[in-house]
Length: 477
Image (cartoon, rainbow, N blue to C red; front, top):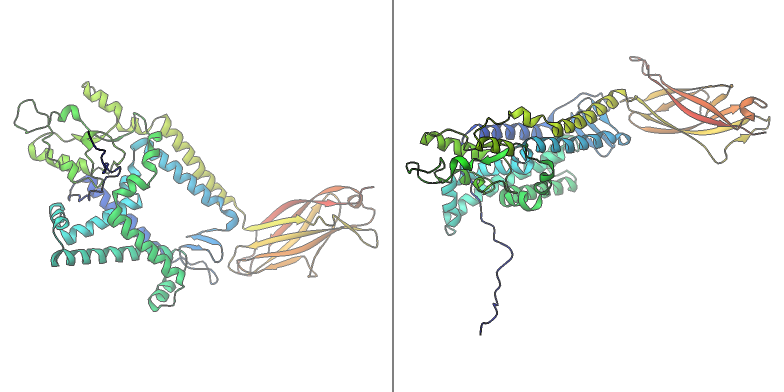
C-alpha cells in the first residue's frame, strides 16, 4: 500500500543567478553609447542653467511643486495647462506601440531604465569580480576574505550609484546647487533624504539583485506586447533551418550551430534564443554579437541569429529573398501609429505657440443676478481672475464692447486697471452698469465682450490683448 507524499513538489522554482559573459559587437557598442547618453542626460540635466529673469528659477528643467509650475528650458507649464503633460504621456504610449509593432521589445532591450541601470551594475560587477567564470566561482565558493572583500566593494559602489540616482531625481524638484549644499551640510528637508534613500534602495535591489526578475514577473509589458506584434514585426530569431542539427563542425550533416552556448552565456535574461521567441527575451541583440563572433571563428557566414520577422523566416526557408527592412517598418499598422503620434505632437506644438500670455477667467455673480440702483440703472457684478505669467508685476486694463453702452468700474480702484504680482493669480471684482431705460437695462440678456490688455513694462510695452465673452443681465419688462 502506497503512502501519500508528505513533501509535494514546490510550485515555485528557486532563482538561478545569471552571470552574463562579456561580449563585443555592434549591438553591445550601441547599448554602451545609449547607456552613456541616457545616464548623462539624467544626471546632468538638473545642473543646466537657464536665465528667466530675476524672480524666476534659473534651472533649465525644474518641477517646481511649491509654485505649481514646470519649467523646461524656454517652456513654462502652469497647473491649468496640464493637458500638455497628458499629451506627452499619450505620445509616449503611442511611441511604445509604434516601436514594439516595428521592432519588438526594442524599448526593453535598449532604453528601459531597468535595463540601463542593470547594464551599469553588471559592468561594475565585472570590473570588481571578473568575467562570467570568475563570478560563478566566487558565487559558489564559501564566504572567505576574498569573497567578503569583493562583495563589500561591489555593494558599496552599487549603493553609491543608487544614491546618485536618488540624488539626481530630487534635483529635478528644487534648485540643484542649493539642494546639494543643503544635503552635504545636513540642512535639507527630511523628505529629500528619505526620497534619496528610497530610490537608492530600490535601484540597489532592482538592478543589483532582481534584474531579470523585474522584467519577467513585475513588468506588465511582456504580456501586452503580443497585441502590438504581428508576423511582420522584426524581432530576434534563430535560423534553425540553417543551424540544425547542432554538433561539431567537422561532422557531415550537422548545421552551422556548434552548440557552443555563447548566445546563452551572454544573455542578461538567461534564455536560449534557439528555443524560439520567449516572454523573457528583451531583443537586446547581445546573442547576435556572440553568435556572429563565433561564426567568424569557425569560418561560417554571420546571421545564424539575427533580427528578422516571421514572414522572412518563411521566405528564407524556401530559398526566396526576404522583404526589405523598410517594408517591415513602414506598413499600415506602423503608419497609423506614426500618424497618431505625429498628430498629437503637432497638436501640442500648435497649442504651445498659440496659447495666450494673458490667462483670464470671468464669472458673472449669480446671487443676485443684477441690482437696481436708486436712479433705476441696472448693475451686474463679475469676478475676474487674472494670472500673471511674467517675472515682474504687470498692470492690466479692462474695457468692454457691447451693442449698448455700459459703464465699467473696478472695485477698489478709481481707474480701470488691475495690478497683478509677478507669477501669481489675482482675483478682483468689476461692475457693468446700464443706464435706466436703456435697451440693455430692459433686455433679459445682452452679449458683452470684455477686453483685457497687458500694459507691459517701460522697457517692453505690452502688446497682448485678449477678449472674453460674457452676458449682461437686465430687468425684463
